[in-house]
Image (cartoon, rainbow, N blue to C red; front, top):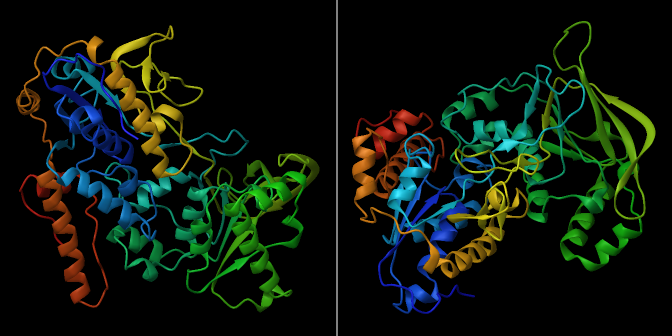
Length: 482
């Protein structure tokens, strides 16, 4: 598939700014450069990719567990796009402060917002704000070395509940239950390794509201649970319920069939007496549990002491309804991982109920539902945080197609020269980073890992976490120390 350009388009280069250098932003930029209009020579484009972080890749660097085997492939694909040299990267540039919408209007014919979704969706139950209750997205940011979160994380609980049945919930549960030494082959930051190494955790419980056939994680995520050393997976027969919709889904969807087959095989192989399990840690998978309340107790008021669920049952359609039976689990920490939620951007209308920029196929809309000329959206900020990373390619194609259809009516930027925005950032004292700077930081992180590997620690890379160190290394300043 390729996006096309209306006849009669003028030859002046199309200047486009993409806000967000994660997969959604990179895919949009790449599709634009490969559109039929560009490859045929009918149009030239000049694309600048901006990100608030000093490094590119967005969700891939700061939102996915470091032990995922598929991440290297996605990073390599994004690297190839940005390494071609026809798309400029500007890191450590914050939209709304370093560059305003008016600035972008001055320097670009079109702006594509690809800022994703990084906040946790709310779970409105009593006690969710107790000490020891956390958002899964916040924990992901910590273990991925996000530069804007605290370096320490309170890992003091022996028993932990994770609420959610999606990929993020399994990531959070796997990292919490996995032994820290087994993560040394990844790019895990040193402070994260130290925190996980000291964790006293023995049991991590993952809870889903519906049955095994309605889970939202993928077979790959599920299989990765079984790769954790010295961690037993525990399942419960009373949680295995299948209704008519479940049976239909199993027969018609190979992914669901695979996951249900894996889960049923695991429980069939599990000893009837769970005391026969020998691992030092256990990861429990529970289904048909709807969270009702996080509670404390008199010994530690204001601090998580447990979580209460209502048992559910399937209603024949694959949905769940309450049974009136309640069950308590004593835990000292609760992580909610029920989804991500987008954040509003300055000077752009925002749908606070859906967590997206209002849009029609990618054309940004104002409060009255009218397309704002020259503004577009793609990825999770366009359609919400659903689907896998690869799904953003389809989003990007749709958005780029509309942008090119609108080309003749876009407001022309007063200052289309490619060096004008560089001069503006320098004038404002913004310590922006570049693609060349990322290559320097990337090499530095690999070198840190290599030096650790020489000492017998098997590190492929050690991620640099502090923003100021990332910027210094990227801009050729003093490098961080091991």
